[in-house]
Amino acid sequence: MWCRHWFDIEDEAELVGDFDVETFPTLVVIGPEGLRFAGPVEPQADTVRRLLRAMASGPSPAVRSADFGAEIQAFAKRFRRRIES
Image (cartoon, rainbow, N blue to C red; front, side, top):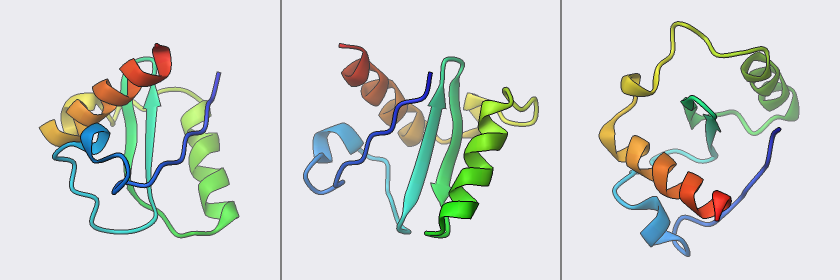
């Protein structure tokens, strides 16, 4: 199941923590197995749609949560706890 959440990083500084968002818009995709994607995207519906379709087709063996920095992993854990509570 997919859920969409949007928030302002300045209003949610505690949630974002040390994850330094440098480019806007930034998209983070978190699956049951952990982080799937974290990075800037072109603000075009077709681009986002293609990315999400690729994510929905299953986990990529080339991408693992360990490939992401500690700050984004910590953010993903905090975010997951928030939406699961």
